[in-house]
Length: 233
Image 1 (spheres, rainbow, N blue to C red):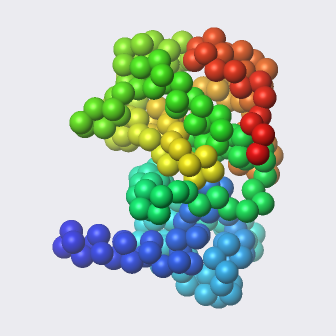
Image 2 (image 1 turned 90 degrees about the horizontal axis):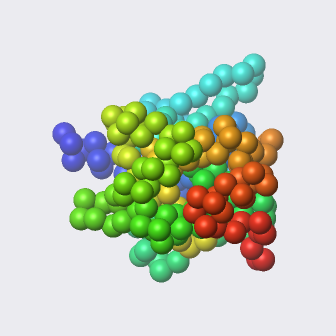
């Protein structure tokens, strides 16, 4: 029974049109049915069939607003599964795939489901390893006591995160930087606290994130990062 479910799920994700839809939902959050048809390169009627299968399988949820239907991933478990598949695919191919024409602001900093991706996300991850806030262990990535202290200064409820069903910290493959950024419950909590502190701001109508002067100062003090300038690309 378990093998059959794994096979069915893999077949659902493995279809190129559905894979494009799922990856777009991971990056952009909620997307209309018509936009997903365009992303997948299929007719609206074909897209509807694909989306119905994804909803029935519990991978995607649908919300109606007037005549429009909007879709999003069913939860963090689906997003993390897609991230893991992306990581394996990038490893096997030897490099990540960077879509052409992506907004430079998104390359600098953007939401990847519910955590920080792009140049800023990768720099935060690198700094956490450099300061030994994160370390590779046989069971996965672990937080040090110093990391817990730093997260506490941001106001992260670490005890609450440790009791959640979600993996505490994981590394997410960042295709735009061909590197890694911090995901899992900790990654989501860092983005949440930076937004609440007005260290970061969302860009309306986009997944791009903007680091404020207060955020630049806070990350410089907490992680030794100089993020005052966007990288030249």
